[in-house]
Image 1 (cartoon, rainbow, N blue to C red):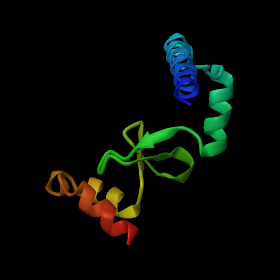
Image 2: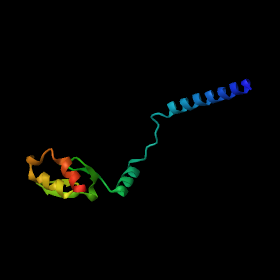
Image 3: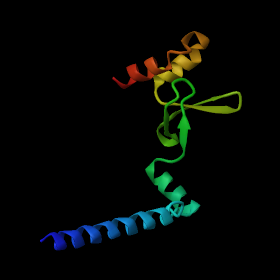
Image 4: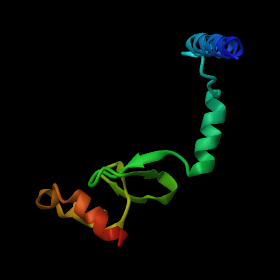
Length: 104
């Protein structure tokens, strides 16, 4: 019985070593989708991600509230963040609070 157990353990150990070697060889060889496919997937998922300048939340551009000022477009996650951003520096640091309250 102990001889059979020895051979089973030996085979398992060899399989484990083979698995480790194969994993080591596969590092850095992660298949990447071509840029065109990634772009299509991202557009399907909601488009380009934009960051709310007030609270820092990332969201799809298609779901964001756009505000054009001075030839530049800013995107916001909610009307509360947009209004707080427009209120100016007095609302700085309140981004997370404004975002959280707008989600309730």
